[in-house]
Image 1 (cartoon, rainbow, N blue to C red):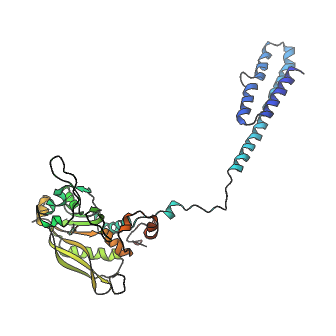
Image 2: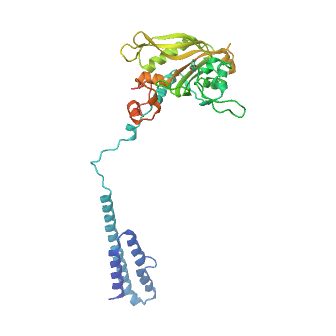
Image 3: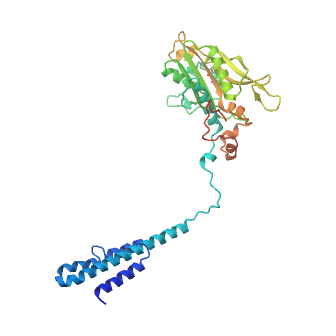
Length: 360
Ligand code: DAH
């Protein structure tokens, strides 16, 4: 056998035997690569006489072309085999049940939903949202809000106190969202129109109280803001929130250190049928506290009470969520039970808007 035939035999056997593309590439490098066996033969052409080259040249070129073709053909076969193997191993069982996508499974917690509903309503009235820290100083939680030292109203708040700081003062877990009124008035020139949703804390827990709960505070300060504005704002809010066209509202005199006068607000309801229906009947349900901001509070924030006046209110978010959505017990709100959230949660992309509907 001539040398060319031997080379060809060896190359073709190796090509046939290559089990995958990587092995085939190795064969290519060993034969046609720069230092390959066939390339080495090609290099000998330079030392040949013209006569010899005329015979050996075409023979070597033929060899090179045939080996090249064999490699290309084998590569196609290997590619197809690899693809078939992959398709066989990655088959999809179309009879398997589909997986629910996160959007159809995920749920928004009723507290988040109700906060979104409330902020949508007040945003429509020109309010912005303000926030403050959960851990407060005694000054912001009580003193600046006109709770005198030792006043019994402080004790009514069942406050959680933190360990004393180095200077002996004790921070508190805020007992209400009212301290954010002070923080806002300290830094913002009136007119002020804010709502303040957030977590609040008191040592209290049963079916309708939890040690951590949520409030929404409201504050309006301007030069001529008056009690009629307060009544209108709260009535419009209650109608929009409870999604009723008409609702009777009753204002009772009350006491909060930070408002004068202070008003407790009741809404009309019907309890005769076992469940509470709002906007019907002749019964009343207490729903929030409010009043005209006390002159001392304005002064504590550097505002002149002879120039500025305004109103404020505070409402329990958990309670109005329970009322609106008929939830009898507050405790499951914070137990992270998937069955409860499946039952009472809201679909994630159904954002509450006044135009599109608050709760759909
Ligand atoms: N901070 C009060 C509480 O937690 C609620 C409240 C009542 C807030 C009257 C107000 C208000 O802004 O004017 O009991």
